Length: 175
Image (cartoon, rainbow, N blue to C red; front, top):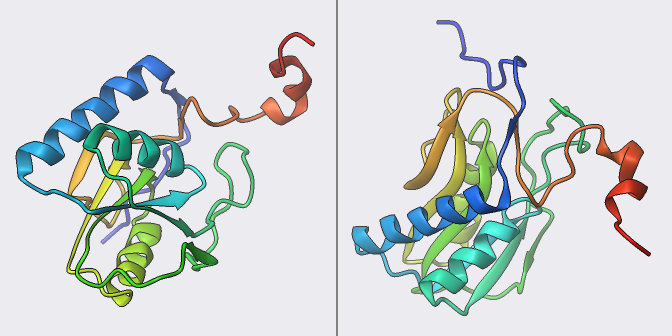
């Protein structure tokens, strides 16, 4: 069986702030409609932190954790990806009996979320669910909640677009 490529490398999909807001509102509605009431939101650093903070506000969840699981080696388009490795959990304390919603911006191949779920369960969470803004159709993983599925590289409003590192001074704005 041939694997479905994670990125087709045909187009760059850009999501603006307004669209990201609509997607996050939709995710919050879906989570509430499902009846899942998280007691903790765990955002995957770095890209998952903006949507995790938004969902914590939309859902009224104040207990927030950060899971450091770096994957992409740079901000460049089609960046090389390493294995999912847990760097840190902040704050590092038990999740015994908690209902945890793990949030990331994108599920590329599913490896990051799989490690995040294993980590949170290992800290004693009673129930674990996952939410992503975007899931790549080639992903092995399937989140509990998602806004949209795509088949190519996605740039979120909280990221530098590929190639923007060279023009960062232009993005800084007036001085």
